[in-house]
Image (tube, rainbow, N blue to C red; front, side):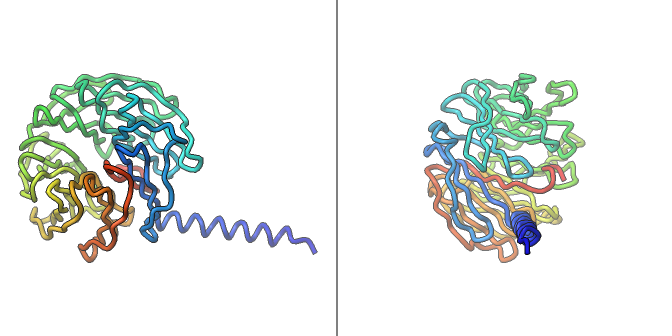
Length: 327
């Protein structure tokens, strides 16, 4: 009797199990600035499973990264070599590079996966990179100073930059590829996140020790919510009910969206910054820059349930989703 039908069945079953596992528990990716590496965490067991280096080609200033929705490609700001990289996750091979100039920091992939926005802080501009061809399609001068963080609006029509040097946000119209407005903030804006299916934007304000709530549709600041000292990173829950703020002083503030009140302060490692939630919103991964670790917060318990050692000076965390970023 031929074993071929059984072999095919076994392969199909394995593929289904693998796909289901990947959907339920994606990997988290952590860029380690000084190590020139990217740590890979299995969110199912909260264990470090791989370290990526693009086969030793990452520089010693790995800054922000982003990942495509399928979890196949990482986009990496290699500030040491002044370039943006595309790295194939499965093979740890460099797929593409493009020169982006000095002092670039933030990178974001558009909701449709077609465009990468690079915040070139020292150049006071944003670069738009075609994700397929890895060519620069536009260089957009911002009105503010030192754009560090880039965030696409949920509909993908606009790009927002957090301008450290001028304490404001630039609003970039992607149809005209130009800055059309600025929004004043409380002081030294850093990370930002839109509520899902919303025009409400939360922006960390480092020198103001809080987070600004911005009505993006009206282009106005609604209020500033006090947090712990040196607010730096922001993540919004998928259900839109909570916002998490990483504070450089060593904690994560949990904000109830309905009341605009901090309902819990969770201690983590030293100098936490960028964070990421699992797609189901059940766990939050916090990069602790000065502790060389990632804290894992159970968002139901609002408590740290694991501490994972990574490389030197982790910059942040990204986790792929089965849905585009704006959904």
